Image (tube, rainbow, N blue to C red; front, side, top):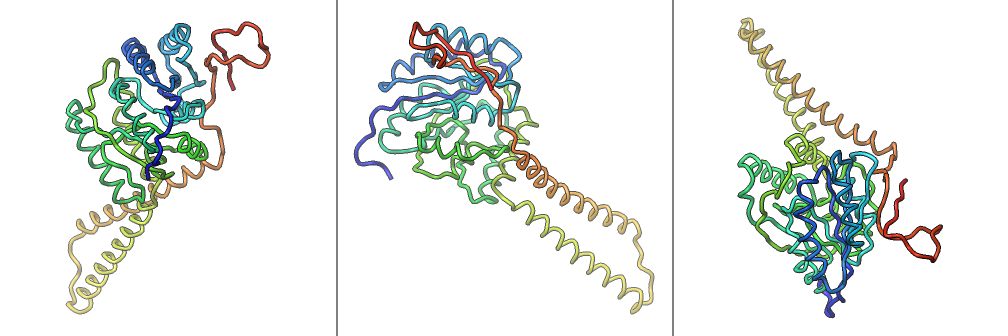
Length: 335
């Protein structure tokens, strides 16, 4: 429900995970600064370098030297996109936090519109792609299938064509900070914590420069993480398939007994028996694989390792040892 009295203009933190994005940063930074200048409550931008092997971190550090609102969290290695998002959310201090990608497929010019909806009382303002024409047919079909399967098998309402591009209030970010599971589908977690949501549509442009960081295998892994994190339906489906296989096997056994003792004939069709055996053996292995996926996730959760490790942080905040004298332009720290 929206607040009756509009909220004051928020201090906005913009969180941008990056991995080998040196090609797109010169295009992103001017547009991002222009948007930050236009926000009445002020803004900061947190870039989270997820173990880049190019000049990404150096370019962000240079941008911080020119504009202290540009800040950097450099992770010790590549922990993956969801962990980098979490590192950015943990660092952001704004009244509202905008999460976006660096490839300019999430246009920063939408942020002021998100902020206006936040001021009207919404805690989550998510951007929904009204067009995916720049993507391949395979990508569009698999995305359609992912959202339909997630909608059917989970209790979470994840809207179709909604990625991670969204604004979240401080209350939502604090709620997400309590969820420290390792296999993270951020859009699913945002849906799970609740609060008031609204959606704005936009036409998603193509990547401005560089290469996609989500090839097919990563997309499949993300889909598996989302499904197993929010639903036990695959386990129940495995049990259902097993019961169906058992009933089919009992039916065929009854038929074999009937032919042998009532019709006094041998059961023909050894080839079909081999095929049936291979089929049901494959089902058993598939079900064991599904169980193994869940057991593997339990194994990783109980180790309680941190989601990420910070190599250094450049945020323009002086350390306690620096006292009250002249303050440096940035701070470098690590875990």
